[in-house]
Image (cartoon, rainbow, N blue to C red; front, side):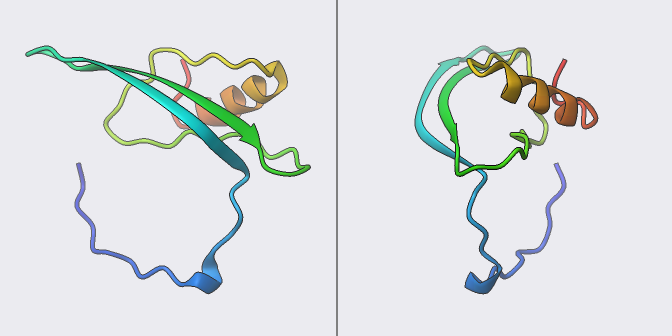
Length: 87
């Protein structure tokens, strides 16, 4: 993992998020060799737009991703596969 210097964030730089997360459930399976985390999130599009949901993470392996809204899933998969986040 790369350690970087803190960057100041100004209120004037704030942008309304494209998606809102209303609920998160996490289950942890701890093991000496690996830890597995199962996360269930309720995510809704914030407003009328067609921007995809972008998953961003470091030092993680996304094993699976399921979405009720097939259109959002396809957009997410297309964008994030470029970054190695969707299988």
